[in-house]
Image (cartoon, rainbow, N blue to C red):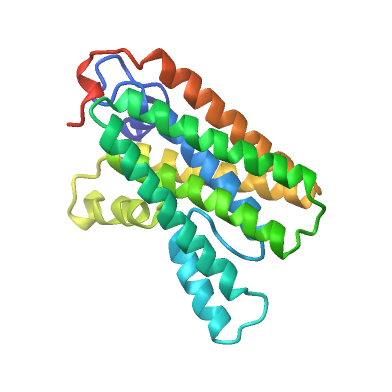
Length: 244
């Protein structure tokens, strides 16, 4: 247990010799952003995810199968815009990926600007959102989250994908000592899961309180914090700046 708690603490407050430098806590913040944004999109944009694409594929099948409450074009649009955002993330990785700090700075800055525009749209347009508003918000948030996912993948900090938790849960169980594994990284993996949970919990509470646009405000603030922190390390020449 002590080792797991130490691992969790080093994820949110990494030591100076951490092979990933200051990146882990910033990716934890991005995971909270995912929980926030997906809570907003699912509860306000017609049962669509903009970050977790497995859900969208299933929702699209539900809609085409005639299940009530699902909009086929919203799920399809979520997938398409996510792919577009991932393409943008790939282009940024090609240009800035040599230095992981500068890569995160550039990607988070672009994502922050996109989510800020979505926040303004959410405040300006009346709720419940009409089809035109749904299209605009799904496009903006889908691109932003696709960009985030591609960035986390390229930065490659183990067990901090910021979006997908399925393999994280599998790792906790399959790598446990009773299963014959080494039993490592439980603390870090738990932090990842808890971060997503906290973001979704706060997001759903704000939506339930009829404060849905403030979910995106909080996501924008977290992205601004990430940008500010990443800017401090953009000129670092330490070993963590290159992918292991």
